[in-house]
Amino acid sequence: MDPNREVIDEFRANSGRVPAALGGMFKDANLLLLTTTGARSGRPSTTPIAFAEDAGRLIIFATNAGRPQSPAWLHNLRANPTVTVEIGDTRYDALATEVTGAERDRLYDEQATREPAFAAYQQNTSRVIQVVALTPARVGAATAQLKEIHAGLRKQLDDTLTAVDTYLAGNGRLPDSANELQRHCLSFCGALHAHHSREGGVFPRLAADFPELKPALDHLTREHEAVAALNVQITETLALLTAAPSREVAVRLRDDLHRLAEDLDEHYAYEEAHLGPALDAA
Image (tube, rainbow, N blue to C red; front, top):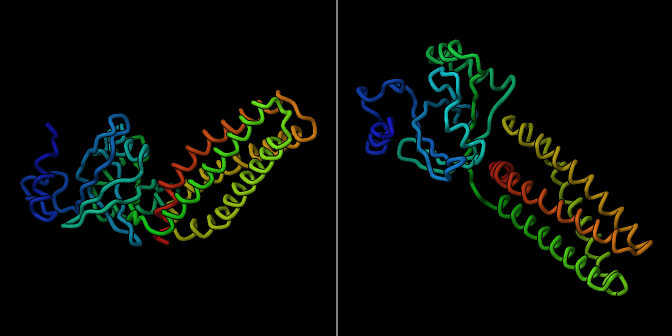
């Protein structure tokens, strides 16, 4: 039996209000319902959580009443940052982002000043209690465009891999297949570089407008650097293949492209979950 079930039911039945008799640790607190997706189970899990507001965001705190371990909902949203928020009569999807450093300290100190219980929670545990910002995930033009760009890059990469397979099937003796391979590979590598260069120019503005996104932007920047290095390696391998056709080099090119495809799938998923909603909000 979910120990929060009665609180959740009363919240939903009374437009976000919970009777004092049921409030317990939530008595007199601003309360929302957070629904996350289980990191392992994939099933939705709903938790009542006290919140604060800051610059248009809802801020929640992973206190777990000062216990040594973080609450399960934090583990869930780390695996899938798209969550559902219920506040009053309103329900919407949101992007959950951990806040760190000085920004985290400011938000937690302000909450502890408003609610002294939060100061006690931090004193009772050796872990630094995590702070999470919830930003409405308005899936609009920016997110749709980002997904469309990623779909186009996937198609270009698939076409490039098909060209490699055609080249290998002809044992490198078909001039048409070599020309087709070079065209596809250069087109894809150029498009990928241009896409990441444009995003690199946007990241500083996003970091200024959304300080809570800095960890995600830093993560994406590191991935951009790794992808760029692999992109250069692929271009160099293609140049070697063009100068001195070789099945061994063609196989190396195919292997590098498959590795790039795997890396990009993870990168695209992370980017769409963390960057898309922020671009829409901007």
